Image (tube, rainbow, N blue to C red; front, side, top):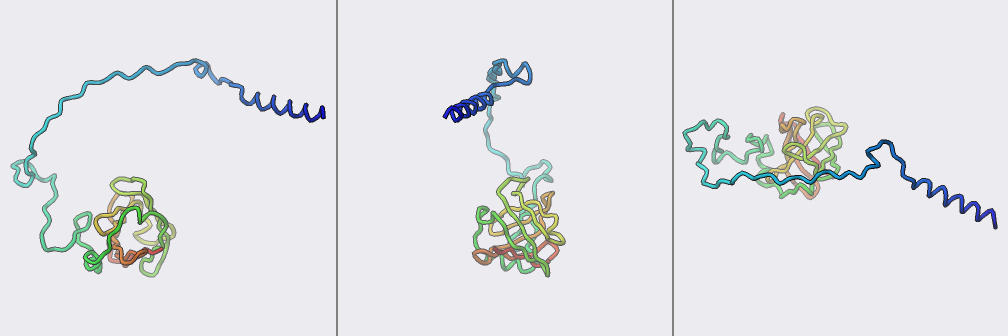
Length: 185
């Protein structure tokens, strides 16, 4: 019985010595609080009507050209959908970013690989990547939903391909070079 009490007492002492505070330098023992931040003055806010950039006499090169009506559905970068994407753009199902998150099986031409999409922001899109892919998809770094299309982008934010939702867990489209592309779960 004494041995049990001695072992228990030794265990308690060891546990308490583990709680002892040790200091690596003299700063950690001082109770120093940072000084509170001082309020900064705020510039006045101006309000007014902005001029129409299309009728301005100043340099309008910073503004994109107005879309040409009747040319179909434009891609995120202003280009037209490639090949069968024109039909898919008009019949594509609604898509949300949240429904895209996770692992997808990719078929592109004769090859297949894996793609993983997250909601982590990366540039103008969300982070994504591929594993085991060939060709253009090896450079995929981000993606975004624009209307009814999913745009896959390289690490610099340039579009690699576009997909449209064709079934509950399937997206079809093509790469920028015209290679057929589909995602499925």
